[in-house]
Image 1 (cartoon, rainbow, N blue to C red):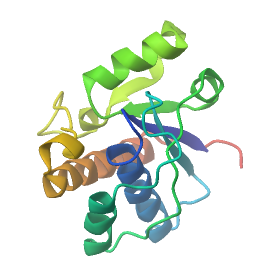
Image 2 (image 1 turned 180 degrees about the horizontal axis):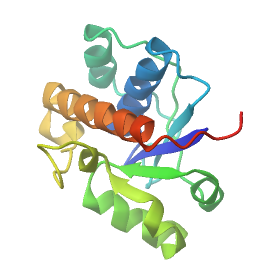
Image 3 (image 1 turned 60 degrees about the vertical axis):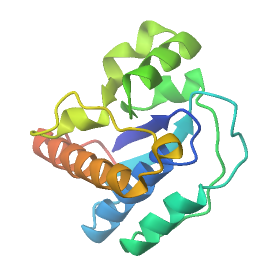
Image 4 (image 1 turned 60 degrees about the horizontal axis):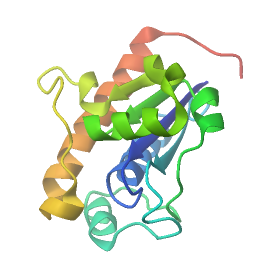
Length: 159
């Protein structure tokens, strides 16, 4: 089973959107046995806060099932346990490595690395830009790319 952590700064917009979009993909394609994912923050600023209302709204508008969510900060133990640590922007990677150490660097990827046309592009923080539609579209593309990459990789873990 692939274990994935989606990470952004506060864990109230981008990373929980990615978590819920990815879960929707695996549920709709009956691949729950193959993937597990969570989302976390690099900061403590939003700890305990729910999914930002605009993020919830755009997910609902796109038919994504909303789960109960409270922002949590990433731990070193989680980073060591999970296979893929997916960040939304380069700042998230830098903050993460400062927080937990560089030993996990080979597991850390930008979400957009998994898309052909958007390699290296960062997902802008809609909390600042106000553009939740653009963030949703980028996150969705990234999640589709990650999902297809992992399926094509073909490593089956013991269930």
